[in-house]
Image (cartoon, rainbow, N blue to C red; front, side):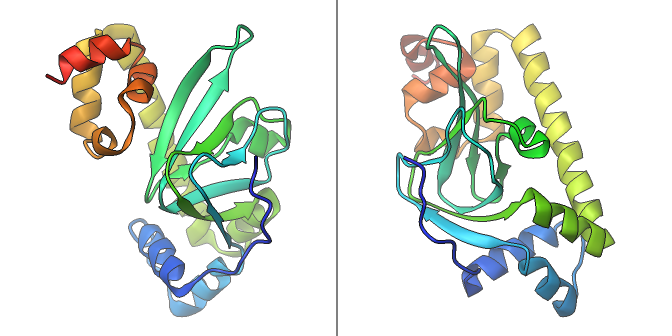
Length: 200
């Protein structure tokens, strides 16, 4: 079930994590960050809770402060396809639904207890309009996202299962300590037994 707890303002720790993340791309003065944080709220979710469920409205884009998420699409036959994982310092949402304000075609579920900073599309637009640095920040994040998506598509098209496993292990070793093998296998498009052979 989607967490419906009343949203909270950002805690000092979340202030620090969010500011440090943004300043990897653009520097902010204290006054500028005060403006930025006005547009965010924080939410806390338990393991197995949903931030987004298919068929529902998508209100927020999420920045992961702590925890781990999986983004999943369920096809017409009922088979689940893992689109991505998101851990600390990553952004995630069903962005097609978020930016077009349409119903979700994917679900976003906690694999661990998770804390997020999030904002509505309205606040995203206000933030970009009010502070050019943040417009540049989100453009850079979008560019990184495009690069990552193209790399994954090329990997699926040109690499065999073991190569995909090795690429994921090299790029995101922490996932292998935190994500069940069955989910990693689904993400890579292999059976759990095949994944176990790779990891021996």
